[in-house]
Image 1: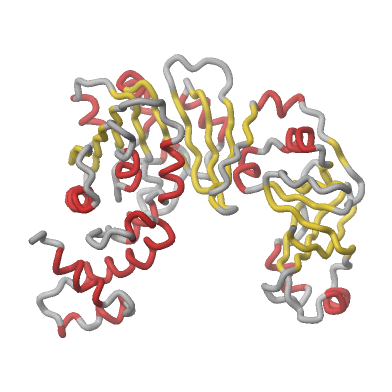
Image 2: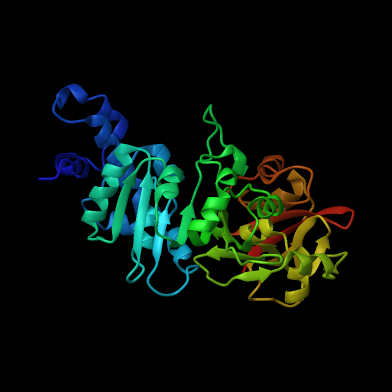
Length: 392
């Protein structure tokens, strides 16, 4: 019997119970590690939406909350496999953690993954979970990954690293030099030991600075999931020259908007001094990548202002990469006008280049979240206005 079997059985038996209440009942189950059970129940509840492939396996063990929070989702992990070269690959995951990336990278046909992690308990969970999933092409290496890599003799096709983004007091950080390990101190070795280096960075990273610090960046992939920016991936290769291509995607839609920063610099966007029949808001990855003039140029939509990242047109542009709204009417942004247009006092509020954020404006208008309609507030040129819209 696996050492985790009793914990897994107990957790699944009590999966619908409140983990905190179970912790208070430790005395009733003196032979059960209730802390570990609560951890499993929380993991089970989270896995259905974040890691369906783990949820489908009844023998999975889940790590503590912080490791789960820091882990890639199944959606973003699978997207990474589309960035890899074809063929059998030798891959090293240098910051293994919960191991989701390693497990999915190992599903590449014929590839082998070296999972590196300092935490002994995470290594034990990874050993258990890889066996539970029937994945045998993973080698688990416990210890400091930079030391391990320095002593390793073989060359890797792909090195993947996701430095811990927590400071000495637990605060979130995003600059490479503040993360652990500090990859800037090891980038020479990393580039020598792998044909491709994939660096996962915070969505808050400065793209231009990140490229300058890493050097040899061939591409940057900005990955959003259902409207929220989740990852920035720097793809580094020793032979990369020139400026990197920036790719923006909002999964599960796999359509990618790709561009060079120099293209955006010279692009001539269209501008409008009024709102047409349609409004468009770019998805989160595009908001991070900021190809604002190129979006206008490629899709034939007009910007409402240099700092108002909304677009308009009189004819529908169905393939615009983001949210699309049909404009129903202009709307004065006060309680009386909102109550007249929205008798149920419900609407979603969107703001762009507006003095207050969406939550504050919603409160000012006396509206609650919900319904099928949207109130969009923005600055058009130098004039602030509002519009009642429906999502198309």
